[in-house]
Image (cartoon, rainbow, N blue to C red; front, side, top):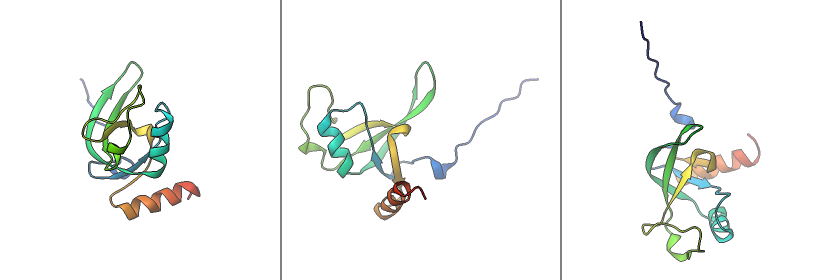
Length: 111
């Protein structure tokens, strides 16, 4: 007898399309890191991502002010002002900007 189990993610711990997010992209250039420190994005698409070690999701995040950041030769925003981020890079998220700020404060003080 073969039994299949499906693991359901806790949606409270998983960012969803439409959520506002703060990200840290360690691999990005300095001006992108600085941009991410001061700007939040909004998830517009979620894709499954698979590498040798794990299955993950990539989150396509739109930043409204992204057009002001020029390509540094290695990293760039897409033409639509989006950035691909992975769950480990999302440090806080919320359904509204206010909820995002509350979650950022809670993370900052380890609440």
